[in-house]
Image 1 (cartoon, helix red, strand yellow):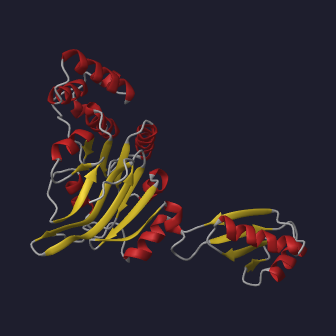
Image 2 (image 1 turned 120 degrees about the vertical axis):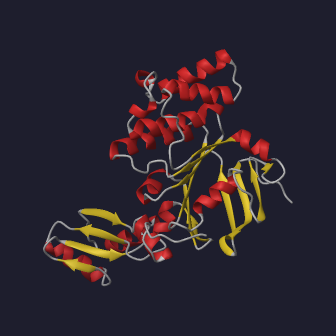
Image 3 (image 1 turned 180 degrees about the vertical axis):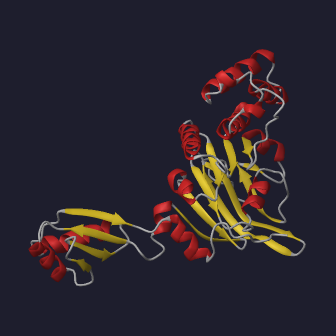
Length: 319
């Protein structure tokens, strides 16, 4: 089998998993470029957590082939584990220990040595703005502080690939934004993020590529903008300075919806550069000047509903 390109953090083909005869993953293919955020979306029970568990060596696949940074998942699991970190949906921190003690425990488990371990703990406390709370028991931490500590513990081993399973669940909007900035900083430093989330705006904000999993199959994959163009509802909104310009534009664009009160036309379109340029060229040929233009495309919620046919919080059993 051909070795995947070195810039692929994950290259998976034909990934399969069943539980008691129920197919959870039905031969999916995934390629995750290094140094990017890859978001796996889908309804509850679609197989997202199972995929993460397989790719992070926690469970075995029933079929398929996976390489993580060139290492075979089936035959080189220890090498794969040396390159990855996993932050689950629920914080894996010890409430009875302080923040510093939690980090030191991870340093000891990684066999960093006394001096290296202390240095790593101090650096991570500072990086995640936890220095002031370093000697406080984690039970006194807020939800956002706990999630930052959890991610800091994952980074003790300096992983090249981090699996983040719903990292902002239960956080307030400010804490979510802080976590987003941390994720962006990690990627800027060369780390690859494999993200699962039920917050579709989170995937829209963070992900370079998004894959939509439903019923054990990948039903769509692409950048957020590419996925939004898969569903109807996109349009270009044009505003004009006066009713004369509006009328002239309406004659040039008979497919548009006209609003005389707001002096606007709504023209169906995907919002792509070529289609917008063609639209403006038609108006230019008709000697019509546009006062303002705005693009409106469906969001990932629209994509999700169109392609899966059910809301994000619907429960679907996998077992």
